[in-house]
Amino acid sequence: MFEIDPNSQANIDQIVTRHLHLSLAVDFDAKILRGSATLDLEAISDNVEKVVLDTNHLNVSGSFIVNKDGQEQALKTDDSIRHPVFGTALSISLPNALNKGESAKVKIDYETTSESGALQFLTPEQTLGKNHPYLFTQCQAIHARSLAPCQDSPGIKITYSADIKAPNPLRALMSAISVGSEEAGDHTIYKFSQKTTMPSYLLAIVCGNIVKADISDRCAVWTEPENIDACAWEFAEMEKSLKIAEDLLTPYSWGRYDLLVLPPSFPYGGMENPCLTFVTPTLIAGDRSLTDVVGHEISHSWSGNLVTTKNWEHFWLNEGWTTFFERKIVGRLEGEDARQLSSVIGNNDLKSAVEFFGTSNPLTALVPKLDGIDPDDAFSSVPYDKGYNLLYYLEQLLGGPEVFEPYMREYIKEFQGKSITTDDWKEFLFKYFENTCPEKVEVLNKVDWEHWLYKPGMPPVENEFDTRPQQVCIDLANKWLGAKDSGDYSGFSESDITNFSTMQKVIFLTRLQDSAPLPAVLLKNLDSFYSLTNSRNSEVRFSWLSLALKSNFEQVFDAVVDMLSTQGRMKFTRPLYRLLDACPDGKALTKETFLKNRNFYHPICSRLIQRDLGL
Ligand SMILES: CC/C=C\C/C=C\C[C@@H](O)/C=C/C=C/C=C\[C@@H](O)CCCC(=O)O
Ligand SMILES: [Zn+2]
Image 1 (cartoon, rainbow, N blue to C red):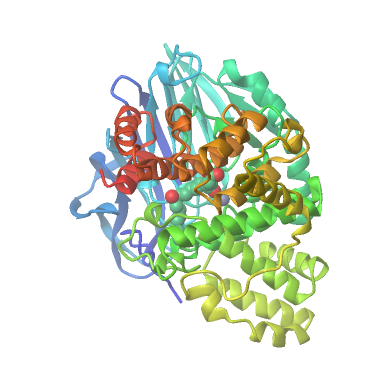
Image 2: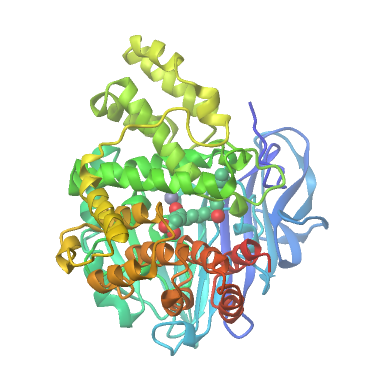
């Protein structure tokens, strides 16, 4: 059954894009991209008279049909339909109606604008090197339409090619394989090819003063020269994670797996752009303790990038499976205790998300309705950790990894290259076990599918993760809470957490948050024994500052402002702004800090914080 995409205005039920070619020049002075998008289209129904594309904040100067000889004939376009969230529908009339199976090549001349939400242009001052401007894109979920006219739905999979003209000495990279370059005066034209079909949200461009450090024959790290050695060291083991993922699933099929470490305003921990994962520099902890995010992005090479959600209502198929694969990698790299700790942290994040949205909020359903809703506004830990919890629950129910992991591999093989819905996923789950272990179908029939998939709030079943690995964290937290009552802090020392992993420190601090507000004297002692404010580990620093703000501990206000002013990762910035704003004397500082940094943040981040704060 054809399922429309509630977040796209493209007529993808009539005509689809098979290939996209972008020919763009980066104009750092005007802060725009200028050039053309050429779409190879194929009708999938009869009598198709137009192609409707998604655009948002683009200036389109002309649309043309391109015939086999490369001659261009101008086409009539209508851009009168504008949706406040989903952008402008660009309706292009075809010279002759197409019947099913017939194709056409359409070229659109355009440029982006200062409102194009996919793009962030950085001034030299906002980069590490301070000498050159920088551009990067973020297209997930529905921002590709502000980068290029396209059928901006994950239900459409395309190959793509591009030539990107960049001013020397800057380098351009894309979510594709680099296939050469040519000099053009004081510019260079970089050429790219992505031969594996992918959804539009995985289009990505970066242009800046970036250099490479090879990690293996198929992996490298890219970043500004000032950061390359630290980044190469931090991510030196990514080939190992890639091999583990291949052993778990199927051979890696994207050719290269490179990692780009961006400037600090990048709004997410990572973005799974094929061939070139984008990551935040907040992963650089100096001890390789935050590389689980790389495991997550590597896992997307299968779940999300090969097997893709049909539309954003089934986003959990991308993120729930990826989180499941990520934690399988953690288990194989660091042991089952680490996988259990990660599961506990994820479950805490799920509880926080449900509490923030409200237990009856429809957006806390695993498969929410997104009609008229910007997916950015629906984004939370729910698709990640409610999705993870469902898959973990099914693995336990069906007989453990030895039964479930073969199913995982068959699931990827069945749907690779396709975009699917939750119904497709569930139908295959039942079919697989009907064919391999018929007695398991009875087990599956007893699952409360309606509640797991469509009801808001926490899942109907709470998984019993192994609590032993976290017990040492809970015990230390309880010891601090005991000292709160006695006022005696003499029994603590720096060595208490010397052997704690990042996850154990986060669980320890999260446990104390459950008892917030805590007295200032306790927090002062906690920070002086464990040096939390000055931690290089962004996850530990974030958990500590959150605990302190929940206790209105004003001594951390400067450190909070510093964290809000030196990185733009929404996982940290959004909660810290909300917590600072909730402090009796924090409101003015919140507004002042946001107004000072709003242009430092990516447009997605600025918009969501402004909405969170009601500014
Ligand atoms: C129910 C939600 C439905 C659709 C949401 C789809 C996309 C949301 C859009 O905001 C894009 C999100 C991109 C996320 C990228 C990386 C994350 O996996 C990591 C986020 C947390 C972190 O910073 O580590
Ligand atoms: Zn993800």
